[in-house]
Length: 308
Image (cartoon, rainbow, N blue to C red; front, top):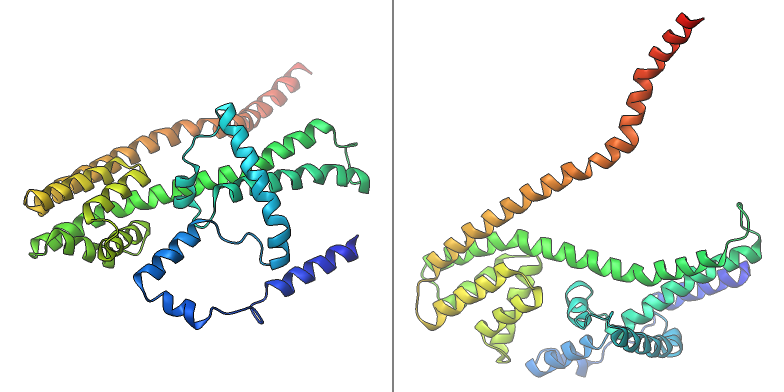
């Protein structure tokens, strides 16, 4: 079994190395230079990236996992567990991952953890006795939920990054508008100056507007709906009013920047209050008992000495 595992690992390493892989043809590279070619590549990437480095594993296991993911998604929708916005969440937190691929990954992770315990029973690796069946089921549930936890963590980090980048974005809008740039030029310039998630989204809005697929206002509105952040909705509304009605952009962005900073300050104060409450658990469980033992042990020794 160890020889087979070693051989499989070496085979996967050899198949994953870059030498000898087919390179994109000249036609594919030339299509990337055109607008329609870039749109086709983005649409193809949205269907899901390859799950395995090996073409053999991709051909054999990928269809099975995709079909299993479709069945699991259908079952979860019937039970009312599926939220329905998994595609949007995957596009934000896990680009290139499709919903069937994500469900298949959940099933594969749960199956690996489920089979680990009977394998340890067969190999005799059970220091506290044979692993019970309920532990197998618990391991499967944990493995099935692990990708969802990872996705939620990715979305939380992305939301925090967007919120941290938003005041700087508004300041760039104010500077660009004060310099006499139009709202479209201010958006393009802000996207060029930012390197985070929000800057990438602004560059995507400007690129789609340049290709003619969507306008600047519609792109900002779609961005606010995807991210589900109220401050971005306010930004999209203020930009639309400035663009359609000719209102000055700088005062609106400046007022919104102050509001965003006030909300962030209030959020930090709230998180600090929650951290103080969370600190009560380790203090009560780990520090307070030790403190009592340190105080009461000498007193107990003295009382026992007096009694003798």
